[in-house]
Amino acid sequence: MDLADESVMHEVLRLAKKGRGRVSPNPMVGAVLVRDGQVIARGYHRRFGEHHAEVDAIGRAAGEVKGSSLYVNLEPCSHHGKQPPCTEQIVAAGIKVVVVGGEDPNPLVNGRGLSYLRQKGVQVRTGVLEAECKKVNAGFYKFMQQGLPYITLKIAQTIDGMISGADGNSKWISSSQSRKFTHKLRSENDAILAGIGTVLSDDPGLNVRLVRGRNPRRIVLDSRLRIPLEVTLLNDDNAHETIVATSEAAPAGKAEEIRARGAQVWRLPSCKTGGVQLKALCRKLAEVNVTSLLIEGGSQVFSAFLRSRLVDRLEIFVAPKILGDGLRALPGLNIAGLHDSLQLLDFRTRRVGPDVLLSGILGEAT
Image (cartoon, rainbow, N blue to C red; front, side, top):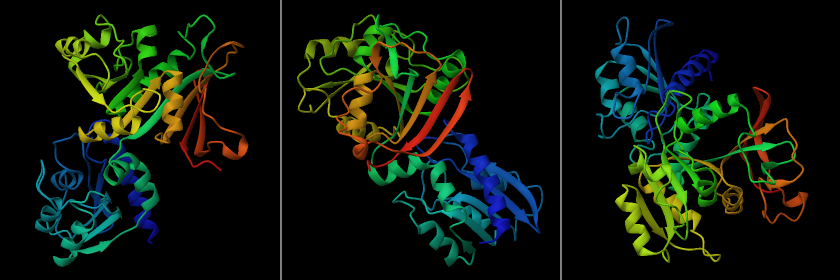
């Protein structure tokens, strides 16, 4: 692998990330055009439905595109969707070399784009910073390969692992800086989920207010339809973006009253305890193009998703506070000991105001 290729691909990935929270269910893609050792254009997929990164870069070229080299983190598409195939436009532009990070896991592409380019005489180099390229689009890979959204579990807790005090009060454990960071996470995910306990105690809006960005769909996990008709989620301007996930045994009359507010009610299979089958919910979300899901509460929901091994990433804000008594963040995980503990990979820490943010990918139990 040429070190120059790696250097350009780092720039490609920087560009790709600028589309975070705007391009789903498409992947984040950046593109750089190089001719005679000089960058002549940079582009990225800016918003779902708009030009793909390759076409964006071609359209911004400051100089002759013919004979140039194109760097892109994901295999160019070869099928007709909202945009025509990028492969055809690459060939039409006379680009002679395409350097790719990784193959597209979409079954409609998955190597076909690279094959088409080679058939048309374009030189193709693959595997440049492949691991980093896959990491940027981890959610897209999971969505395409497993038919499930990429799930991030976000917790705000004290040093001793409490998410609320003995009096049930949780406002505010984390700092204003952490809350702003949480709103950024919301804007980057297709949907946000909270259990009925959180809705009953906090009446949250589950929207984006503290940063610029889109509002995610709101999912309420409520197997018995206990949600009051007066809650914010059923009465604000985004009520049509609220989905109440319930069991098949939930009362039909209450479901119709919720729908009358503009929200959706999904009746899903029940698990042994009577709650909603979480994997069935996740598959249903993927069917409506939810590629990423942020889980914000409460403790029973956190633990249920972890027990089901559906969580991909954890973002845990630890405030410099001690409660002693209160509601634990992760009760009932049924972990026998250290040999059965859940492991965080790619583990990182950072300061967010007075808090510490612990981030990591959930690995297999050891």
